[in-house]
Amino acid sequence: MPFSRTSGIDRRLFLTSVLGAAAGVAGLSGCAESSAATGGEGASRAPLADKVPAGTALKVATYLGAQQLQFRLAKLGELPFKVSSWVNIGAGPDVINAFRAKSLDLANNAGIPPIQAHYQGFDAKIVAINITRKPNYIFATKPGSDIRTVEDFRGKKLAFSQGQAQGVVLLRALKKAGLAYDDVKLVPLTSNQFLTALQSGQVDIAPLANTQSPAYLAQYEAKGARGITTDVVDLLNLLWAPVSVLNDEAKAAAVAAYIPYWAKGQVWAYEHPDVWNEEFYVKTQNLTLAQAQGITALANKPLFPPSWAEAIKWEQETADLLAEGGFVKKFDVASLFDHRFEGIAAKSVAEEYRK
Image 1: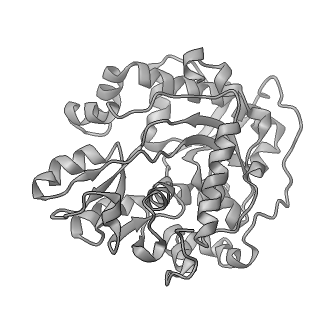
Image 2: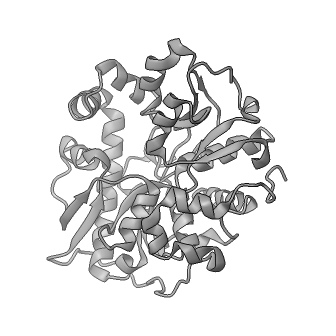
């Protein structure tokens, strides 16, 4: 196996530094011993209600307000429940902490956060899947770097976020290149620290999202920074929620009602890049139109599969990859999916967005 368990990396140090003190207080310090979700609450198998009961409310994650803006621009109408708060949150570790604090009911993340939550002993389930076929990240080098391929990562300092999508993209790229953990220096950071770490030379390489990389390269390419592209994808863009939320009949119905809005909003943004560039990136994120166009040119076509079989297979491979490195204990990821919601997203979009 290319990944060694005998690396000098302290796995608890990663968990503590990446997930933060709040997670430690919430019980992370004991996860290395238990290393598995307790499943104490038990997931409901009750059929989903056909209608959301009056008075139902959810606290929903919305990174930078993108979801509400998509819903408004796409003219999707009012949600059939009250959103008691739109929580501006995106990073997986932050979402897990918000779930624990009961300040969030539903979030949009990649495939790694549900695995990380399971490892921490927190019960949550995936309720919707959007599959991405093209890479969402490139590996950006610090200014003045001579790194040109993933094989050149040997001996270099790599920004690594265990609890986020960027982490699994890096691990998959290393494995594909035949590099072991001991061949590189993994620097535990959260993704919002990656740009600063690159600019300061704290790390040699960081995986940057397609929304970040054009601006970074425009600023630093003349100083020797470059982007290294690979065919490694972060396959899953998903909705997930705590089991305690999904066991509430009214809230589960509201989650089911939200899924079509989520899917249709992404389809609308994909089909209307010019409007989305202007209304979101230019007006709310203060990017130039050229920067916005650079981002949307890299966008994935949304894909909401009727079956979750491919998603479950990919999620298992991801969990196994983390287990190989000693970051989590091996487990069956099938327990992370609530199949009551399977197919809801697919039924809400045109056939071309189902395959």
